[in-house]
Length: 374
Image 1 (tube, rainbow, N blue to C red):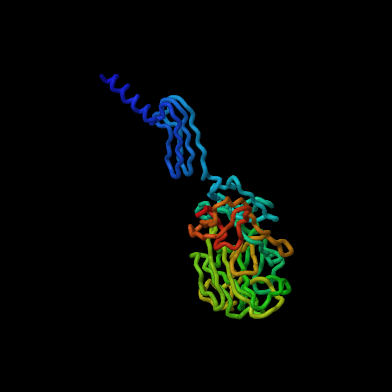
Image 2: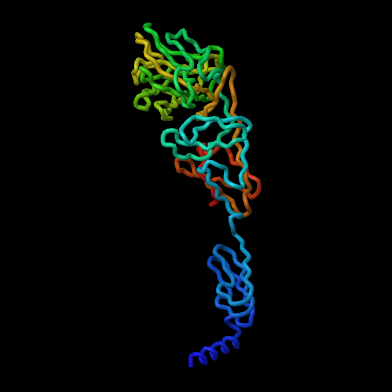
C-alpha cells in the first residue's frame, strides 16, 4: 500500500509540473539563503541571486545547478591594519624614511615606501598604520650636538640608551652656579613667523633631576610660554599661559614631552630650550637657583610648524623632512562613505566616490586600525 500510494502522489506531481520531476525551474531571488531544485529528481535547476549564502540544485539527484552572484567582497571596502602588513588590494608610498615604534617597543626607522605599523611602546599593543602628512624637523642637530653650554649646564653625547635601543642619548648636567640651568640650540638656527603655531618635542629621562622644563625664545614668543614635566610621575607640572603640553610614556622611563605655542613676533633665534627646575613642578620660566650637579637625559629634539607633534625626524646638521604617506586603493561602485577606526577606537566618516582613491592625511588621528564602507 505504501509503494502504491507513493507512485500515485508522484504521478500527481508530474501532472502538475511541480517538484522539478521533468521540468525546468528558475528562481530569481534577492536576499540570503536562496535555493533552487531542492529534492529534484530530474531536470535543470538555475538560480540567479543577489546577496549572500546562495545555493542552487541542493539535493538534486540529476541535473545541473548554476549560481550567479552579485555583491561579493569586490563591491565593498574592508581593510585592517593591525596585522603588521598591508591588506591585499592596497598600495603604499612615501618618498623618505620614517620612524615608528615596532612590536617590541623600540623606536625604529622604516625605509622609503615602507608602511609603518605602529605599536604602543609600553603595552606593545598594535595601533595600526601610522599615516602622516609631510613635516620638517627644523632643529639642525636633534641629538643636541653643538647646543649652547654657557647656560650653566654641560652636554655629554652618547651617554645612555635612547628609545631607539642604542647608546645615543645626551646627558645634561647642571653646574653649581646660582642662575638658570639649561641648554638651547644656537641663536641663529631658525626664523619664526609671528602668528604661526609651533610644536617642540623631545624624549626625556630622569637622572638625579626628576623635573624638566621646555620653553621657547622670548624674542619670538611671550615670556609666559613654557611647560614643566614631571619625569618621575609621568605628569605635567605648571604650563604657562598661551601654551599647551603633553607627556607620554614610551618605555624604560622615557617620556616624549611636547610643547605648543604661537609666536607673537617674527625673529631669528634658537629652536628649543631644555632647562632644569631644581625639581620643582611649579617653577616659573627659566628659574634661577643654586645648582647641585643634577642630571637628566634627552633624545630627539624636534621643532615643527603646526599644533600637533608628528613622529620623530632625526637631523644631523640641517633641517630634515619626512615625506607624505600615501595609501591608495580602488573605491568600488556603490560605495559613498568610508569609516576610519583609529588607535583609540574613535571613528571618522569620509565621503568618497568610486574609482582610484588615496587616503587623506588630514584625518582626525594618525594611526588607522581599519577602513570600511558604511
